[in-house]
Length: 117
Length: 113
Image 1 (cartoon, each protein chain N blue to C red):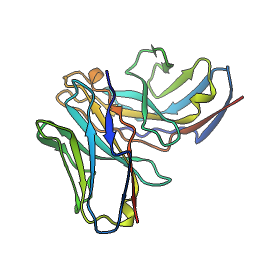
Image 2: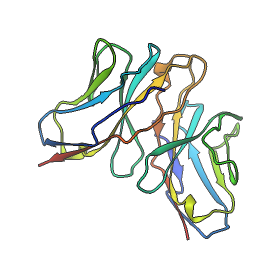
Image 3: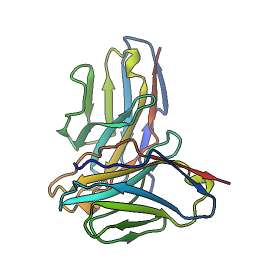
Image 4: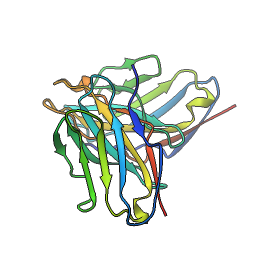
C-alpha cells in the first residue's frame, strides 16, 4: 500500500508566479490535511479537506492561498503571486474515513519544498 | 487542544532505551495523546497514540500516568536512525470528522554511537 505521495518534491518559483502542490492520499483515505513548516519553525496546520469539501481552513492565509480536493484526482494547494515568505516545506497528510478517532490517524507525505526567488 | 510540555533536547546511547517525557496537565477526558517524529525535515512519521491505557507497537511503547497528566514514549533499543524531533500532541476526539494536529516544539533526540 503506497503511502501519501506529494509532487513535486522541490519547486522553485520567482516572485509573482503561481505554485501548485499536489497530494495523493493513501489508498482508501478520504481526508486530506495540509501543513506548512517555515524555515526553523514548527509545523502549522493550514487546511483540512474531504472529497469536494473544505472542512476547516482556519489556518490558511486569507489571500493568495487556496486548496481543493476534487472527486477525482489529487488534492491541490495553490499559491498565487508567491512571495519570498512563502518559501517553506508543505506537508500533506491523509486519514481514512470513520467515526472513531482511532481510525483517524494522519499519515504524512514527504513534503514539497518551495523556494521563492 | 491541551498544551504539552517537552524537554527541548535529550541524548541517548545507541542500543539503550530512550524515554521521552511529555506533560499535558490540562488534558481533558476526551483527548488522546499522539506521538510523531520528524527525521531531518522529512514528513512527520506517526509512532503511537493512546487514551488512558498503556500502548505498545512495533516502534515504541506509550506509558500514560493514571491521572493522564503526563506520558512517556519509550524506544526500547534506540538506533542512530531514531535521531529525530519527537512531538507529543494532545488531540480531541471528534466523532464525526477529523481534526488538526497542533505541533509544539518537540524534543530533539540525539542517539549517540
